[in-house]
Length: 585
Image (cartoon, rainbow, N blue to C red; front, side):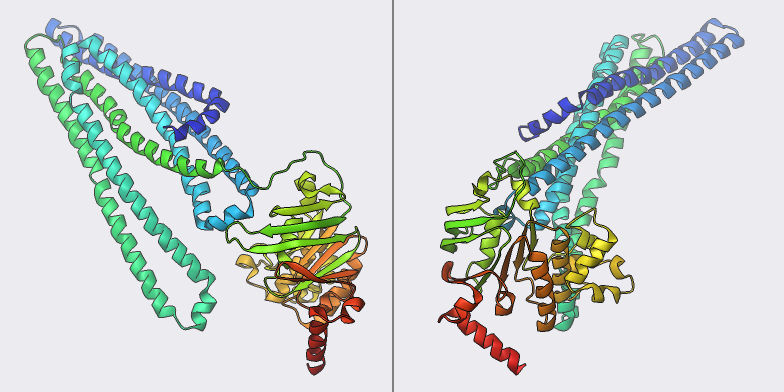
């Protein structure tokens, strides 16, 4: 139960729901216990009628009176039970909502390093399945525990008051029932876990097939994947049937032990009645009703125990990362506007998970409003520079300043709010093209969306779609080509109107003519804002104020376009190589 103590703060938060649920539970149990008493009273009245010869009118009146009381108390108990469930189950839904939000906020706070170490499917499972198991603890498990304890105490007191000896005989089978249900619940839990694991395998396999269906068709592997899916489905079916066999024992076992308890009451109660130890046959009927009232609460103990076990395991998985302190923290709560001057001073960076040294002794300055181009071979550290500016990672050596302040002392949300970035791998959501562009500015007008699309040279492509800007994109923007995705991503960054614009090889998937048009528009957009262009192409860098060349994490050349052409080195070789290719093309 140690892991579940984390949830106590939510019980405190919703203490009024909890207390009201307990009060209604007590009241519901008290009213539900009127029925056995009234039935026993009715039996006794009938016995007295035959023994004393009372008039039929009197006995009918008393029986009718008892029937009306039974109906009334049952209705009241039903309403109170509804309120109990409504209060405690609704409380559990509130806690589920709060816990999912807490988990999601932690996901947003955790650094890139965390996501490299954890699979997306596992993270999704924690916020859905694990939180769902936890809700079963704070809702049904708590509710049935309260209900069981209160009902057991009240019923046993009522039974003891009527006949202590019969009470003892009556409750003897109940611990056996509870233990049997507990053992079944443990078996169900194990088989259910195994079944869920296989179900996850089927879901993961299906997702991969659906995502990569074009590749599968291209390699003509449909039959092989169909066979793999069939095998997984058969394994999942076998685990499901194994679970169903154990679950099918639950009902018959409970009914058998209820029957045993009822037989004990009838036999022992009958003997006691014959021996004159109880004064009415109605007492036996009363006890049978008590036994049936106790059976489900006692049986639910095993189920509740299983739920608690599952919830504790799930909460342990949740707690594992809720306790992780984010590596990237907002160290300055005060907000301040940013201009965009960026200075790298002897910056070095090593990726913790791979121990790759991406940058070493990198120093440069970008004044606000300037455009810097960063060129270099694959793996030279270009994208790492942008990751450090956005504080996706923090430097391991040296210092980065923004507007003269160490980047760690700049409000993290102000920093990222001032940045518009076009990543190397353009990510689009499964939403309309318009909403994907408006992701950079949620309150943007349709006119602003169209203007941003025109500057990104994607407007003409969009209007050719049947639904135009209302076209729904497939998963990760699969509806669009690589170049179209990049241009929509550029439009998203442009519409944000950021102080700092970062382009990470954002034109790699477009043709030369389109690239020239986009670059011309970007030069207009870049005026008055700090812009960093990462690229393999000289054409993307030639209009920049300054250019730096990276190789194996070090700056090997820097200067203006004209300076670097006149120097021997990577930039000059690349320029004439690409110039020749363009002329040949």
